[in-house]
Image (cartoon, rainbow, N blue to C red; front, side, top):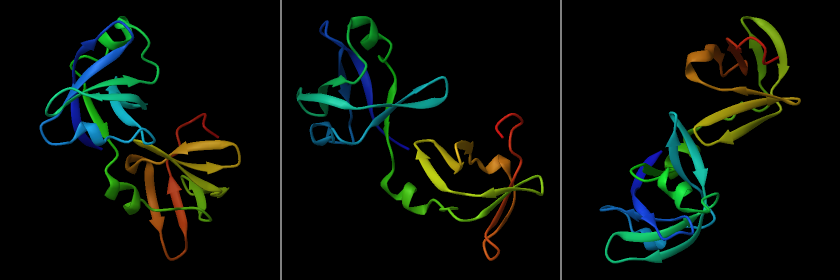
Length: 154
């Protein structure tokens, strides 16, 4: 994740916020890709529904889920992040690999779920977080992945 702006203040009564940046052109922000604002250490996605330029390096944004002055007030002072375009391309795709839990075979990985800041692997209807702290062993040649899967996920 790459910090692109900071929420400077609430703007009006409709939940709009004033965002500022010295390094990114906020007027060219995509409305199809989310921006992320951290809450309790986790990136929460927001979409920019509307953006109005307010001078150099500033824009008034209306974000999804932000409906009133109180909602906007919770965002004031927080950093705004965007997914680094190079990060996702470097992620490993384990689809088709055999998953183990502490050496015990669990099954074949059906898909990867690229949830921003929390990539997961899918086996059937089960999503398992893929975090480096959970990886016990990885064998690219044999296409096996051994994780310390948190109790209760399977």
